Image (cartoon, rainbow, N blue to C red; front, side, top):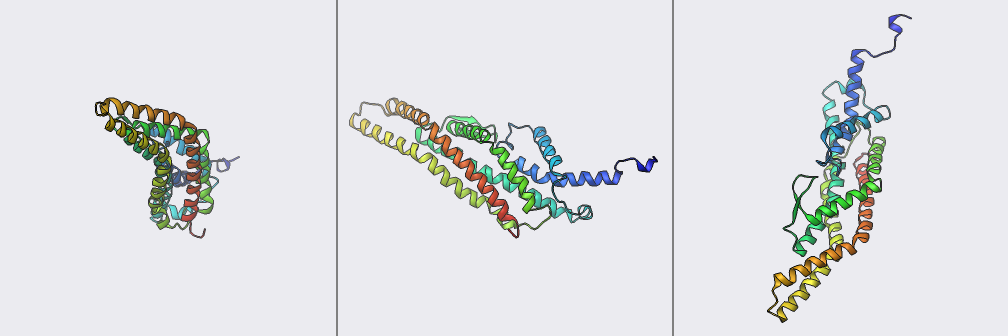
Length: 268
């Protein structure tokens, strides 16, 4: 067997394969950067890089890529921008929809007088009301327990079938993700917080009537502890209904993710 018969890759072929691997990893990497839980500060950047590389290694032989001639010229720049836009918009959609629970928790905390109780949010690094933090952690647990992360990755990998790398993409549909998901987020947050906020409002009205009837009762020493006790009891009693509501939110968000990617594909 001569030297020319030995299997292997030439240096140029190795660079071509590295370029293809980089192009395939853009959509997955952008999704991991912007998606909830995966894009949080709790997940170190090296972990996300390794995760993206592992998925790309799985996909590199299963997805269609443009010819190598198109990837070695300036025509690769629109392909890179398109892959980043697809991944970022998909992750942003889930992030906005899942932010409904944080918004609901913020409004409940404001009604209960707990708006001053802030805690550092490990996802964003900013401050968040305590109830919002509890709701966010609850949603994350439900999301992972239902294998929602696997469903999200399955939808993203399926997108390579109807939205191949370098194919036409409806950028208007991609950029409208914030507007559509924002409206859904506010509607979902209103449905989550409305029962608890309504009961707290009735409790506050009752406290107001009592303190009005007996002026000697101090509003802060009498009404504030009752409001705190009421919100804790309501949250305890609402744990199971909130779990089912979060499950519906996750199912709806994953369905919206698939519809969003299919709607952005030209010809679908």
